[in-house]
Image (cartoon, rainbow, N blue to C red; front, side, top):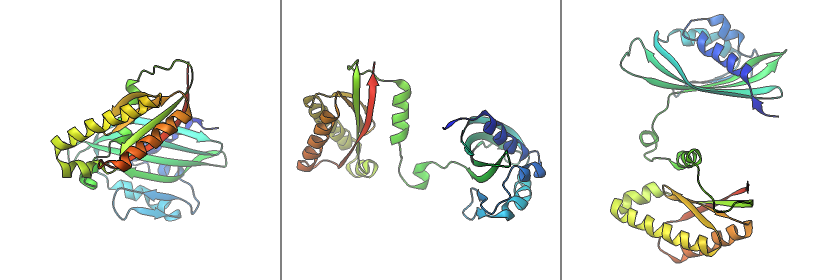
Length: 253
């Protein structure tokens, strides 16, 4: 059974703390001795496997400049039988760049060896904006997470609710071709058409999320009927392609 792990949080923090404090032996002791060890860094060529990783890890981290600020901003860990994983985010300021803040993410995967947790995979990364890397903003997950945090109201008060999401495929590219004014007009028309179809099928148009929508239905059949009607309407129109997903059932109390 997967469960939160305070023990792995502590082990992960020991690993993180040993890096700036040059505790090379502790770093090695926290890593597996097997050939399955994997180490992934931020540079293009920093992907290594095998026992050599364990022997060279102290020297690898030893060249990092002194750290003026080292603040943990995110941490969580889980375990399941003899395996576990942890994720950390730290805000760092290095002595050689005192005016620049770096956010560094670290993912650690653990296995139990002779009753002790050992790292078998380490991945470190420095976030780069999606627009800088791919030329597009990828906001779908962020919008849904934000909506979940804000909460939403369902008219349905009991039984099961089937929740459906829709999303416009390649919306960033389409918007750049159409221009802001025409794109805004098309999105408004698109949302109105979807609301009509969803409500005609007996569903509730809960909210729009960027270029996507979230709706709720009292039954899976109603959700499927709405999805099929949306597909049919999309096929008959000249509008952008729409992807939809039924996201399962939830109990309303």
